[in-house]
Length: 78
Image 1 (cartoon, one colour):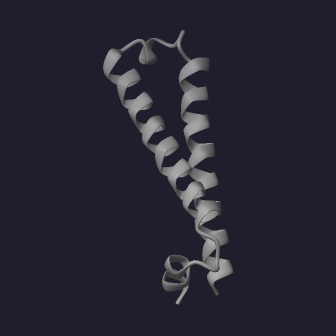
Image 2 (cartoon, rainbow, N blue to C red):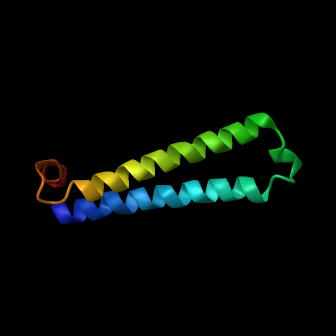
């Protein structure tokens, strides 16, 4: 059960990293669009992407550095 929990946390982290990449890609490829020239829109997209990037990185790091032999992951899986 702990192995399943570890893979689920890792998969969620990777999904957040992909979502952050998509947000940054959307911003970079649509800078010519007048809707993206607004400073508030750019700030919102960058802040959202950075939060997804940090959350995804934290989840992946948690799943890698706390293997199933650790007590923390066993408690989450139980």
